[in-house]
Length: 279
Ligand SMILES: [Fe+2]
Image 1 (cartoon, rainbow, N blue to C red):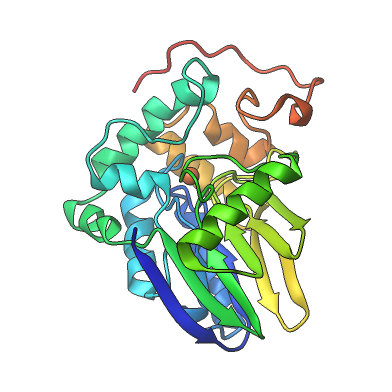
Image 2 (spheres, rainbow, N blue to C red; image 1 turned 180 degrees about the vertical axis):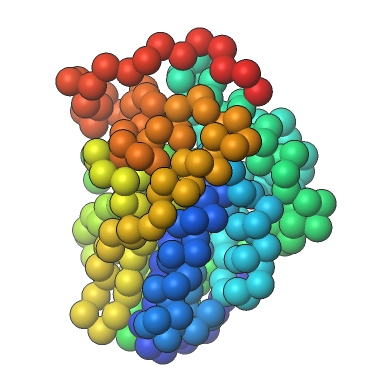
């Protein structure tokens, strides 16, 4: 396990993840960092640079050039080893799994060997202290990079993950996680579990804005990211990524919610049946 300790950080921090090859969103996010004068070492990525959208290599290069801390997501791990599957942890027969064949094939083909080598060296855990609190950054969960910790995941399950993480990196006050694409904050005992959501894909909430978080002296605040989502949609259509997530950029609704826990699905939504998208 690669653990990267950043030491003590000062000033405001930006937390982002789920870039998902969405260059338009990444540009808008980095513009916010520039306007707020936040240095690269305080801009922390929770993984999944490459996924659903059109521009994997440009996103990887932009993030490398920034030089801030970047955690490996399952997408980076699987691209680095040449796997033919995203390793997202979707159920075998789910729509999300079927759709992943197209976008992962695009992501793998369009990501350079050099970027994949860079991904292979990314850490599995990042730790740092900020304003007297110790943070641990992970992708999905401590037990499994691809485990989904949802807003409705039972407290006991999250407690178990915190316990595993404590054995790996020592005690933390705050866990920063990614992978689900959904922003959330849970207080579990004395520990906060926070997910900043994704900047590259809406949070299945009927709006095109995406999500990132700011950590300041006032605590952790999740923020909406407005960006040129029409441009990102056009870019996807331009490379034939038209299996459903292109429309999500406009509607804010995922192509399916069969990957969500039953208590989080939206029963009033009717999803198009997708059986065999072309890779
Ligand atoms: Fe992930």
